[in-house]
Image 1: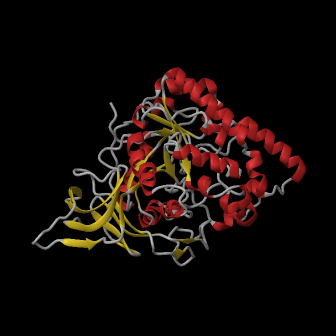
Image 2: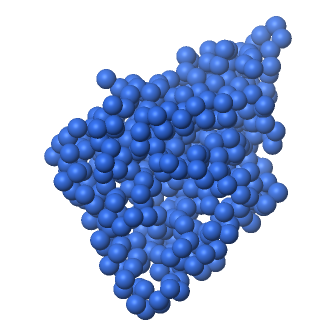
Length: 449
């Protein structure tokens, strides 16, 4: 249940500044921010001396697997892991089973979340080559956007980015944000055939970035951007993975005015193709993790604002599935529990500032998707907040992994920082390894005309 809470002496990271202050939470809302707040009456007080307070992380790209794949994860288990990682809001993709391709199926997902989600939520309306008539009826004040990510992904030629004529129709008729998986299927098929002639059915995992290479990403992204510009469409390119693609995006206008935006995933910032040798299929994602030069190019674009937000593409699979040979091994891995601490590790290495982390993981997702009253520490905003101890090392191991299936590509990694408290709508849902029994997540709303 909500209560009046006073967070004292926190180092507040917000809107490009860090300052020490107190934050008062009342009825789920940030009611007061000041240098010092004193109350004589009983109030739940958290001494945050030495800790940093950020707005709750908004992860706009996850796959929580419900309905249809709940052996891998579900809304309750994965949102629980998310709040332990400082994520207070998420957007989930449509490739559940069945895919969220009708308004009824989309509403079912919202119904699941209403009773089980620890974090705030929204769900993308799915689009394939047959349901445009349904998609255009989506209420974009209550739904984050439209996406093809993962929908009919296994079927050759079924990516929306492959269907130029249909994509033109989509761009001309759809309002709101259209978020697409951008890879060229013909190039992937050509590369797969070439590699398969060499290795038959035993393709090494190291070939993944050769099959889903720079060319396949760049062709699709360049084509999608050209069509979006033609129709003045609000386009978002998901999980950018190459330095070459990053050159296609602008950084000379404010994010609120951009029509074409993009994101980068934690794993594309952390890993490179050298890591396949030790981690194998545990880091098999689509698009593929590519070269060290691509990783550095993505970092450059993130820091100079061509890349707008940081996401996880959290996509759980069982360890048994990940142990299959290349052609049968699914792409994706878990990330939500460790995304913020991974970015804080880059802060410790002086790769990025704390202010920039808050910008890319909190402020910008709210701006980009026009989320109402979230993403900032402001009076009158929802009290979605995360407290972090930057000097509390821990090592990822099976005993502290919270994903339903119990593994992580970060297993064995020591992080220097730890999430100590997570508030969702003013409720303390996570505190030093303990969870509230109160389901605090709410449906997100959006400022669309």
